[in-house]
Length: 327
Image (cartoon, rainbow, N blue to C red; front, top):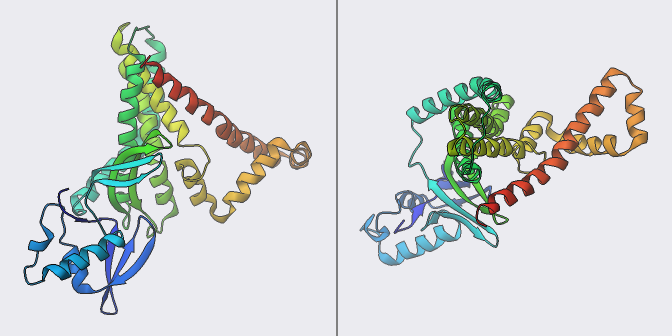
C-alpha cells in the first residue's frame, strides 16, 4: 500500500443521519459524519487521498485522515498488528464479497465436511499397507507441511464463514505470536443464528489439517524409499499435529471455541468440573457411583484433560524438531 486504505473490518451503517462504524477487529462502534465516511470508503491504498475529491480542501482532507487513522478506520500497510512478540501481516484483503465467492465457499465447505474423515482413514490405511522407509526429507516436509497446513487451515475458516448466510470475512494472513508462526483469518459470525454453522466455522481448520494428514500419508505411499517419502510423511505429521493443537480446550483455540458454542455459559463449569473429576478422588467416586452416566462423564473428563496436558508437550517437541533442521 502506498496510500491510506479503508480497513475492510470497519463496517458502515447509516443511523440518525450519521455513519455508524462497527469495528469488528476491536469490537467497538462509533459515529462519524456521513461525508467523511463516504470519502474515506474511497481510500483504496493506491489513490492519493488529496485527488479523490478535489472539491474538498487539503486541510479538511488532512484532518479527516488524522481522525480516521486514530479510530483504526484506515492503515497504510498490510501489517495488521505489531507488538512485542507479535506480528500479523495480511496476505489477502477482498475488495468486496461477491455471490461467486459465497457459492465457492459453500461448495468447498460442504466437500470438506464430507471428505475430511474418509480421506484421513484412507490415508492411514493405505500408508500402513505400503510402508517404505525414506531418507533425508522429514524436516523439510515438516516445514512445508506447516506452511501449507497453516494457510489452508485459515482459508477453510474463511470459507466456512462465507458459507453462512450472514457470515463475514475481512482478510487472511500470517504472522508470529509469542515468537511462533501462526496464520489468521479475520471473520465475524455473530450474526449467524445457526449454532451448528458457527461450530463448523470453528472446526473447519481442524478438518482441513486432518484431510491433509490423510492426503500426505496417501502420497507418501507412492514414493518408495526415497527423499519424497519422508517429506510427505513430515508434512502429514505436521498437519496431524496442527489438527490436535487446534483441538486443545484453551481460550481462543478452535476446540475451545467449538465447545463454547456447544455448551454456552456452561463451558467454564465443564472445564473446572473435568479437572475436579480427574484430580479429586472423592468427587470422582461420587460420580462413578451414579452408574453408566457417571462412567461416561468421568471418561469424558479424562479425554478432556489428556488433550490439555499432552498437546503442549507435542507443541514443544514440534518446535524442537523444526529447529533441528537448522543445525
